[in-house]
Image 1 (cartoon, rainbow, N blue to C red):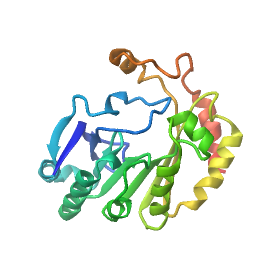
Image 2: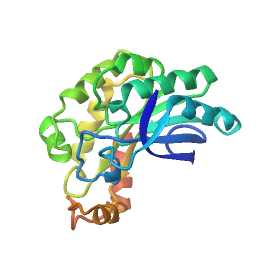
Image 3: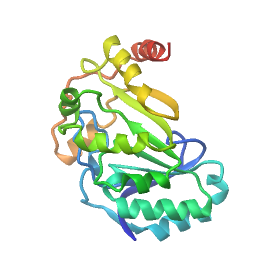
Image 4: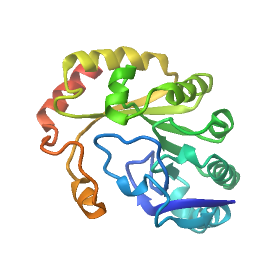
Length: 232
């Protein structure tokens, strides 16, 4: 089964528990204002690999990953469902913990994909459609389908939201988020991620206008206070 990837990180430490191999798949429908991986939006310069090669690489380095695992990120891994599913099945046969880092916007097959996924790291863009559209350029229809599939299952869940100055950095937003996440079963972790400027140079190299030009990086002290509010 062939797939299109951007890159592979061999020793990921923040994309799930333990040491992990992180596979960044190509393709994404969303155009988030703060996206720091614009090079993954389409299939230009994609590296073609196979699910067999991914599984073999995990197996060769099993001593590293047996207490960690493999995470499929992107881009949006759900946009290559057949390839993703075959990778997940092969990794589960090896006995490796599997995770997907996703915005929940794919093209279906969610129930089967979730069956072979131990952990879902879900990026919550917004909780209301108007805000979601402002941030991503899309409506919540497909995301909602994934959420309904996720709520029916027992996958472990990590929830994340990027906090951007002037967009969603208010106490009101955090209190709404706190209420919103109550619908998810098996939530192990909730993280507020501070908006940063690390992706700005990528836009310049790709000749793309940066949507948040002039917006400063998120203040770390404010993130700390908002996190305390979320956890209170």
